[in-house]
Image 1 (tube, rainbow, N blue to C red):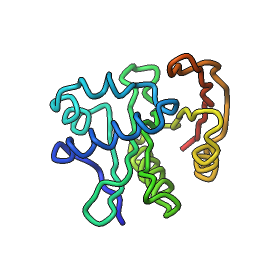
Image 2 (image 1 turned 180 degrees about the horizontal axis):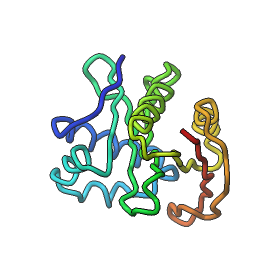
Image 3 (image 1 turned 30 degrees about the horizontal axis):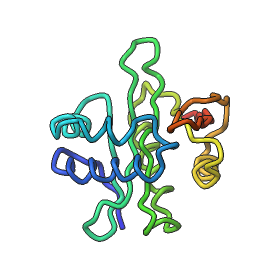
Image 4 (image 1 turned 45 degrees about the vertical axis):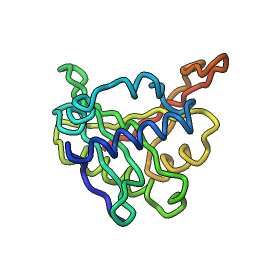
Length: 165
């Protein structure tokens, strides 16, 4: 198993993994399967090659098995912050440390940008595995957003976390 930055050649696999994540855990992601599946392949390619996002993949043999991204703030007064987004590890390879490795890759990327001072993220309240992973990686909770995501008629809160670099 290894971690690497994804590029345009990974767009189809990245799309498939994101759609899997949104389908299996709709409460964990703000985007829906319907919204994301409507995006053309060029959108997925640009997400992997643009200047505002960096996406890492965890590979099990030659198969993409996990993903996590880092989004940079374009606004001048917020450029010291970045956001960890889209964290997902396939169920069949969980408990092997891939999530931890993905978060570490995101943090290493963040540290390589001297102007960055912190990384923030949100995690769905009740997702104890993800919350505990982020805590092990040095993130601390700073807030709770009630009713942050609606899936059908059900609402889910989001825990806001941050970590200084």
